Length: 71
Image 1: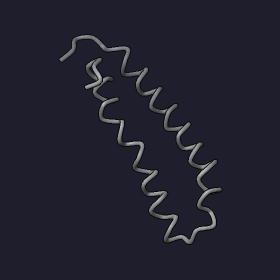
Image 2 (image 1 turned 120 degrees about the vertical axis):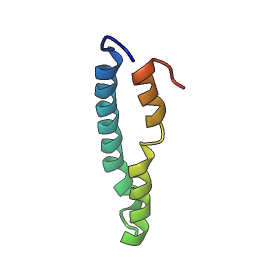
Image 3 (image 1 turned 90 degrees about the horizontal axis):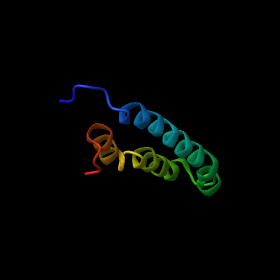
Image 4 (image 1 turned 180 degrees about the vertical axis):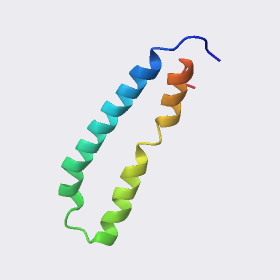
């Protein structure tokens, strides 16, 4: 338990929001050009995978926000 608030929490939340915004804009800008001509059953798994991919580095990032260590 910590007694005082950490600067990492608000900075981490802002960084997470900024990162997700950039990630979402990049996906929205470039992926439709690459797979827009595919049928819907082919596009669905790609968008599903890209929608879940941002979760992969999230665990270590949340650990850093809470403890200050990356692992």
